[in-house]
Image (cartoon, rainbow, N blue to C red; front, side, top):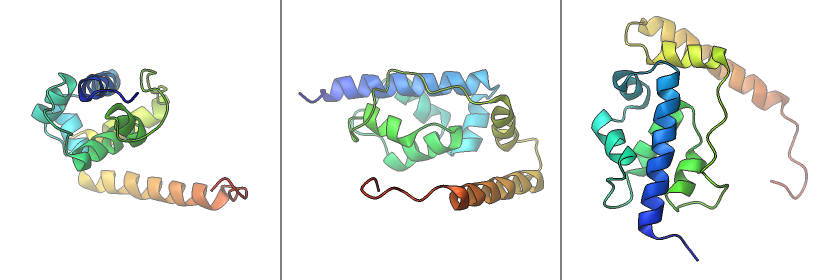
Amino acid sequence: MAPTPEVNRMRFAQFVARTLAGARDRGMTDRDIHAATGVPPSTFHRWQKGQVATAPDLDKVKRFCEGLGVSVTAAMTALGLAPGRDTTEPEPPLPPEIRTILRRLADPNVPESDKLVIREMLRMLAQQARRTEPPPREGTA
């Protein structure tokens, strides 16, 4: 039996609460979270309280997740929009060096030129990782 919209709303609220707690543990303020995600604090606070009359704007949910380094799939699953693992488990903690990078990218006092260098380095690392990944085995793609 599929969960009711109320259950999905509460699961999403719990997901948002865990995500915000993780961001706070990394030293992020509402302002930093807004800078990293483009999602206004009023919106993510409403989500956290379960005050979502209908499905939230999925573009905002995606930006929220990507900006804070959490699984978009977990958010969609909490909303009842994607099959997947149980979202009651917290996301694994990020290594300290990743938290430092996220803080620098979200910090409004860090010059944009520094942020650009960090983003370019991350893009290069991601490209390198894609090149070195083993090809998918037949039947698993």
